[in-house]
Length: 174
Image (cartoon, rainbow, N blue to C red; front, top):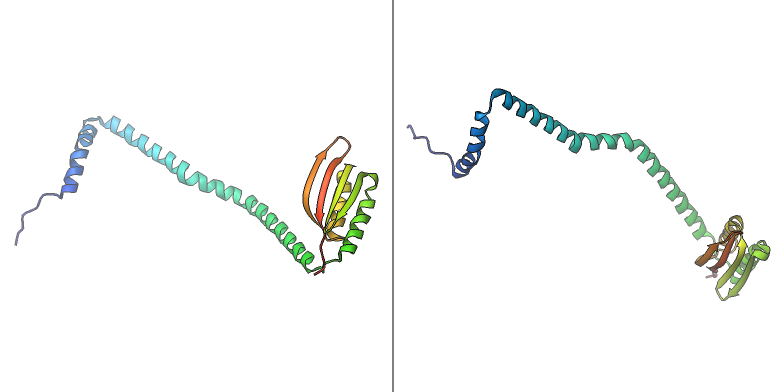
């Protein structure tokens, strides 16, 4: 039951014919040259392994704690804004007269730096040299006191403050 040894498969034979010149070149090299090429190949492999696999993972591990802290702070800020949004949604709507009175009171605090015009469910605030603090306070009062939402903003900063217009929508009672 002896079977004759068959020749290698075609794919292996084609590989052998492609590798034959490389193998003959390798065997023609001196032992010292083969050692130098082998050491160089190992060094190149180690460098490639470092650059492609180890260093990116190491960098990720090194920067992960600060990135996690930054993302955690961002998440908490978003949660705070979401909670504030829920509180504002739960607040009942104001009658337009109340909202207009609250906006007028906030505008009166601006003095000569602000003028308010009411048109239906919208109000337009015209600012003349209002300080950033005055604008911030007016917006906070408009949001909490009148439950107004900003619609349009066209401001420029001059040497003495903000100049421009701000259009808000007044909340209407349902």
